[in-house]
Amino acid sequence: MKPPPTRELRTDVLVVGAGVAGMTAALGASRTGRVVLATKTALGDGSTRYAQGGVAAAVDAADVDAHVADTLAAGAGLSSPAAVRALCAAGPGAVRVLAERGVDFDRGRTGEWALGLEAAHTTSRVLHAGGDRTGAAISRALAGAVRRSDVSVHEDAFLLGLLTEHGRVVGAEFTEGAGAGHLLRVRAEAVVLATGGAGQLYSRTTNPAVATADGLAAAFRAGALVADLEFFQFHPTVAAVAEPFLVSEAVRGEGAVLLDAAGHRFMPAVHPRAELAPRDVVARAIATAMSEHGGEPVRLDATGVAAALGRPFAERFPGIARMCARAGLDPGTDPVPVTPAAHYWMGGVRTDAAGRTSLPGLWAAGEVACTGVHGANRLASNSLLEALVVGGHVVADIARGPAAARFADEEAVEEVAEEVVEVPGAALPLAAHLSRRELQSAVWEHAGLVRDEAGLAVATKLLTPQEEPVEIRPGDLDVPRANREDANLVLAGQLLVAAATRRTESLGAHSRGDHPRTPHRPTRRSFRRTA
Ligand code: SIN
Image (cartoon, rainbow, N blue to C red; front, side, top):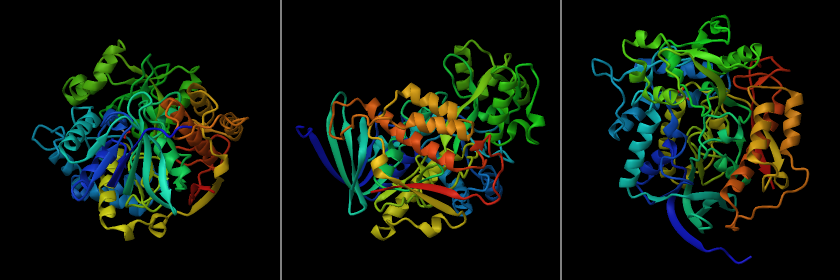
């Protein structure tokens, strides 16, 4: 094969991904050195801009302890208390930086930031902007700041893999440009993965099309530890209409209730906090209510919200009101049909609290990372906060120099026992042997809200190629990106199913129908590729 046209760059810091974590890291690093930011679509085009509810932060310093306690309770015993404290303590500073960058958080009548309530929070602490368009406001502000900065932005750059030398990550390769484009090889002192999650693993998902596990797959292929992969969060309330959309938990925070297909409110009998129980509890209760009524979606009844707020529903939730209107629904008068859908991967590339991965030279922040904060179930609106805070910590850690570029095992695993599973590199998929649709329905059916041994065995079989598919070579620029994404998703799906199979107990978002017992002291499970 003729070598592909190649463009070579050198930089101090390479950031891969352009959501809140990537843009925060790029802006921070650009203050002290050269930064290249590469993203597979456009700046700000990741999951961040779809976030509705907001950013959880203890803006009153007296609330930090309660924010820590709520995060740990939602995490079901698998979160790292030190990482959670670091996150919650940094929250107020992180949102002030966002405000300075131009995010106009909504305010109450007396001018103070308006704080929303969401599930499993014991108090109102969720800052929002544009009502329910918080992610879009943050994305816009950060993308504007990146464009005005010295960061060298490469849009339409698809990650092919990480470059390693003697066990250290020294850069990454991309295809860049429309059509076949060219190969972009970036060598860097530090590489930051901020590529987001993998919601495209599931047929029902709130995630945009770009969420295809590219960063996790590249890191795993390069030998990085990945962890907590059995914990995938399902958002309880996604509109069950022709074009599904998220209906923020903040709507339940303002008083909306859930009704089964017979019009009966079922959550008070399930959990003392009813509709504001942790997300995994509400999602499973909805699935049960649906199966008791022949699969009929439940209804989110928000008809009392306007009276409780003293203003129209559409003023507080303009984005949701507009999407409802497009589907022919008026949430002020009609309960909205909803079902759970895949939303957020708690698992990811294992990092310590500073975002350092197990590979020198590689850091990770945002949904691609598993910092130990979310444990088995993420607390609502902690994801934007984590991306902001860890995006900043990564920059500070890189600035400390090469001595810092080592995974702090002892710090990362201090309170939670960890088992490492070795996966032979020869067994990794280099191409997808099934279509995106087949993959998504296999993972939804057999590794969804409730799993069991028989279903997971079916998923394992479906995700294992019976004969070796034709390998995709990194330098082959004619391969469509969708095929590379599919190969990444198959690898991510195999790891998720392997992790779910090994955890023969129920914990947070990982619910085993055949193993309902919850462990007293859960063990974290990580996977690592061997040569
Ligand atoms: C929502 O608005 O319900 C989503 C918030 C989140 O995922 O944290």
